[in-house]
Each structure stands twice: as C-alpha cells, then as structure tokens.
Image (cartoon, rainbow, N blue to C red; front, side):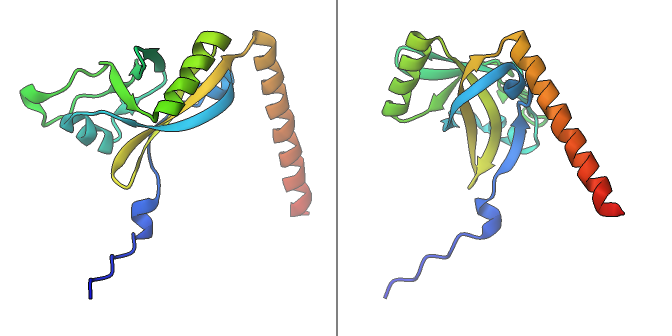
Length: 164
C-alpha cells in the first residue's frame, strides 16, 4: 500500500510578501489582475528571500508573444561574488498562452498598461501580481484622496463614539 502524501503545512501555503507597489493604485485604475511566475537566477532568488527588491519603477511589456518585466530592481546577493546578476535586467514572466493573448489585445487595442502590484513567494516559488491598468487623470487622483480622507474621518468618529 503506497504511503499517503503528507499534507502541506499551513506555513508553506501562505504568501510571503517581498515587495509591493502601493503607488500603482494611486496612479492607475486597476481593471484586472493575474499571477505570473518569474524566470530568475539563483542569486536573484536568494536576494529576494532576503527582501531585496523594489517594483516601484517596474512595468511589463509584450514582445514577440512573450511578456517581460522591466525596471524590477533585485539587489545583488551579498555572497554572490562574480556570479551575481544584473540588478535591473529584463526578466521573463511565465503566463499561459491565453493570458498572454488577452494581454496583447488589451495593450495594443485599448492602450492599457501592465503594472506590477506585488512580488511574493508561494510554496517556495516567486510570483508577481500583474495588473492591467488604465492611467488616472489628475482630477481622479484628487477625488480618490478626498474619498480616503472622508472614510478616515468617519472611522475616527465611529471609534470615538465607541469609547464613551
């Protein structure tokens, strides 16, 4: 009788966040998101495990049926010596063919942008949340800030009300 496979421990299934892009939701209307894998070298993975990354300047582009992430900065690994990687090189994203075709249509036809939102590990694999987004106008950004401030005021008033 074959041995039963061990159930995955809960700590292995959780997302371990490495980098986030909070400015993306301020600058863009996020229309759709998808999870993509990354093609990385060994020193890049070790550096990511030490939380050495920045995706604030990052963007994705579609070239010859492949999706590439540009501007993703992964700091060089300290013990990497001469085998270290280039910190801002282009990295290929791993997506299904249908997802790539959807992105090609949206980017070329609708003029949308591909913006990275978060970089994290799941089950030991580096993943990137990629958003199909449309740029916000200045007045949209101001409206969002007013809405957030109003919500903050309401929450503050409700918390004071509960203390009495």
